[in-house]
Every structure is written in C-alpha cells, then in structure tokens.
Image (tube, rainbow, N blue to C red; front, top):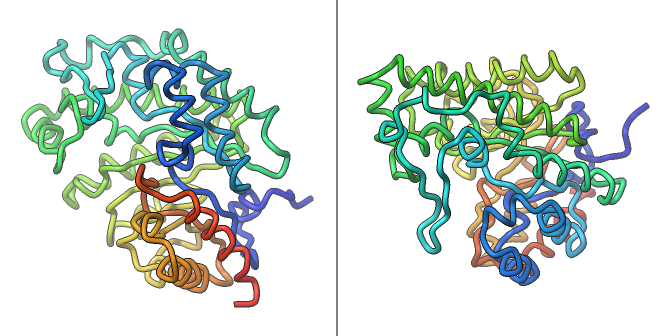
Length: 346
C-alpha cells in the first residue's frame, strides 16, 4: 500500500503534482522561538544533547510552517565529538576542534562501539520525535559524510578550500584513509541507531565535496557514500538515504550512478534540467538559492515556480541549495510553501 507521507512517496519514485517541502536548517537562528530555546540551553552542544530541547527546536518549524518533513536537530560534528575529539562552538566564528595531527592522529580516537556513551541523547531525541511529530510528517535523521567531517577534524575548523585535508591526502595517505575508515564506521553506527530509534529517512551531508579534485572525488565522496548505504541496508533493509554532494558539478552523474542513494540533493549552482537528465532516474531535492529567503517577493515566487516546473513529472523534493541563513525572513518561508502548494496546475 502506498504510504500517505509525501516525502516517502517521492523517495519511492512517485512524481507528485505538488512536491513535498522542507528546508535545510529549517530549525535555526532565523526563528525567534529557536533563539529563545537556544538561550535556555546555555550552549549549542547542550542544546544538541538535551532531548527535550532538541525535540522542541525540531518541532518549531513544523508547528509554524507545516513542512512535509522534520530533520533532527543536531550537528555533523557530534560524531567526532563522540569519538573523543574536542569540539566547541565559538560565538561569531563557528566550530573549533583540536586538529587531528595535534592529538596523536586517528589512533587517538575512541573505538566506534563507545560512541553511544555520548550520542545516546540524540537517539532519545529521535525516539521522542517519532512519537510527537504529526503523522503526515516524515522524520529525517542525518550525519556528515566522512570527507566533510574529516576536513574539520584535520583543520580544526572550516576552511575556504579544505587545503589541510587535501594536503594530508598527498602527504600521509595511510593516515588520512585510517581517519576516513574510522569516521565511516562511526557514521554507519550513528545512522543505524537513528533509524532504529525512528528516523524514516537519513541524509548524508557532504558539504565540502566540491573541494576535492576530480581524481579524488570518487574515492573519498562516492565510495564512502556507497559503503555507508550498503552497510546501512544490511542492518536496516528499509533504510532510505538522501545524499548531498554539495559542489559536485558534473561529477553528480557518477555519484548518482554509484553512491547507492535513494535521492540526491543538489545545490543552487546545479541546472535542474541537466540534473534531471543525469541522475540515473533518482529523485532530486533542491535547489532554491538561500539568498531568496532574505529577498523574498516576486523573485522568490518566480524561483519556486521555475524550480517546480523544471522537475514537473519527475520525483522532486523542494528545498534550498544549502541551509537557510540567520538573516532569512520567516515570512518568506511561508511564501515558499504557499507558492509551491499552489503550483499543481502548472
């Protein structure tokens, strides 16, 4: 029997008259209710690790806007944190970690079977959400992809071109691959536990995929994604995965063919007509420019209509090409939903 949840129907290959809608970072600083809860939590990590508060901020955009999916409130750096890597969030600067080579290398990380000591509150948040979300809303869990997580662990922060991680590949391939293996193992475990707790879909965020040169993209983006997909389905055959190789460009086609995803999220630089022809028939998610959530008005309305039209007759999830920014106007989120849900007649 066909599920009533719109996002799951699309992941099963169905093209709907009006696509399901959710937005990356839909729970976040652009919402006043999020800012109030964040202040109550005390720190960002405390917010992630306090199930009742993480549940609350996950539910806030669902209550306000009525999205078709809710994504677990967490962070991609919880995995390195659980592996024993110090993670802290500096106001106005973002995440900071102790670079991996200053800690003794990958061998200094905890075994994967110990990460639940830290991540148990996240699984409890998923369990709570599986009970508290409206029955028509799909629950999405997520993790950072190994390459993107490794870039932070190696550099100790985000960098413009991920040079420290790329240098490690060239200078210490064995050490880099040992780190990737540990992160991949931890990611499989983490996502499997999210699914066990009630996540219906999981998303793999490879935010820095586009920083790798072509010869390394398959090895460190596509192959780890396929490993994660295969191992997750061995544990949970019903697992559904969305991959987001941001900045993939023309490498999108090979990723679609080999990564083992059920759908692919595309960034705002990706022409949707090209993606439609080069995605191996997989559903597509995207790809509104996040800046439109600040600008709003007719520019936003037009972009929503064009995005829906570009994939009409094709399985589509309407979303942004990257996360919503703190400057976004909540009224523009309402405009996206209003416009998207009024496009059924073309």
